[in-house]
Image (cartoon, rainbow, N blue to C red; front, side):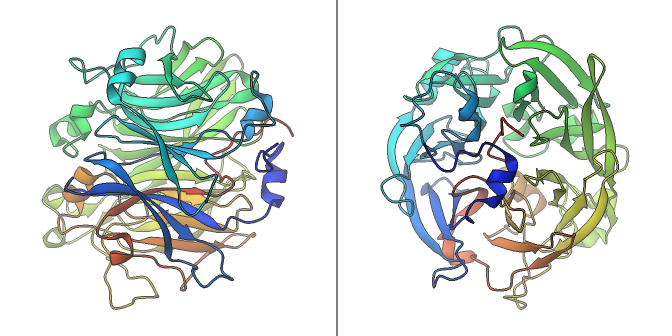
Amino acid sequence: MDPTFYRTAADAAAAPAEELAYVVAFDRGATTSDAMTVVGLDPESDDYGEVIGWTDMPAVGDELHHFGWNACSSALKHEGHDMDGLARRYLLVPGLRSSSIYVLDTGPDPRKPTLVKTIDGKELAAKAGYSRPHTLHCGPDGVFLTCLGGPPGNDDGPGGIALLDHETFDVLRAWETDRGPQHFHYDAWWHLNQNVLISSEWGSPSMIENGVVPELLLGQKYGHHLHFWDLATGRHQQSVDLGAQHQMVLEVRPSHDPEATWGFVGVVISTDDLSASVWRWHRDGGQWTIEKVISIPAEPADPDLLPPALKPFGAVPPLVTDIDLSVDDHFLYVSCWGTGEMKQFDVSDPARPRQTGSVRLGGIVGRTPHPARPDLPLAGAPQMVEVSRDGRRVYFTNSLYGAWDDQFYPGGVGAWMAKLDADPDGGLSIDESFFPHGDDFRGLRVHQIRLQGGDASSDSYCYR
């Protein structure tokens, strides 16, 4: 059995540290291929912090975005697997613009992933009725793949979840059997032992592909609900409205405790005051409820330093675009892509988060440089964040989505990746020796990170 399938979160934290990061890189101009890059993470190695592997995709214009493993620790409780042969080996890599899905094999040489299968967007549309694949997790009935759009001719949805075969990766069907009021989609994850899936909302493809549409944002037309589903049957059970002012309900981070019934979700922006927020859901009797537990205010700024979209407001919104919960459920990390801040909160009491750390890199106004290159003002900011299984290392990249990069950082975001060291008692510091950037990524922008052997946002654990 694959040794990276961990029975408990504690087992995962005690396992050997990651030595490689897989990082997607995309060409905003859609003139060259996107790529899967491999970055060295072993501090004892000469290639620490360097791009040591590179796999080009066969097409252009994919905009690789989120991706994930074919299998994870949750496979220990799924039925129908040959556990002797199943392994965390394949990376399934969707193109958010093309709707193609690439399967990369890391087995023969983890530093050189090999393309072994392409799932055409036409197959996704024909068999599941979806397009614009976004996020995936290994689940009970197959690989769950969230999608933002509907099939050609009905591109704006509703979005939903496509189910892929665990072994062949063929598209099987749409997962939902009764979607209820759900229309927008973004992320999905679950309380596996509770038979509950939680999904969130961004917007339909036409609402996101060319940047934020001001009229839609101010009209409160983006997603502002969280949905709860029966995981076994695919039936919608409950929708919770966070309030129309809380626009774009994105990353879903349930507790890693298999018996827990709570988790966090991030909200990009409030139309009331440009603040961002993090909310906690939890079960209250037979119903689900949600409450705001973190609010992050906008920061006043000279309009002359702001991009056109923000000049009328004279402020920089935090723009919380990713969050990540450590495997031990102790710390929550919050990416503020507008202000350039990565925040750390102690959530050992999940109803009362307490900020314990913060660093700044980049930012719309600040352009805070990395200590390794104090002469280089940084564009972009902490965006996709990933936490090591033991909670001691935090990695992040700086690009959100091509059109949104251009809107908020009109001079370009470049490409960079950073690493923070996390104190077990709280607190963050930048690793000055780790800073792949610029030409290291051959002119491409970088987005999501996956860590060899699993990470804080890859695995569901089945046992205590």
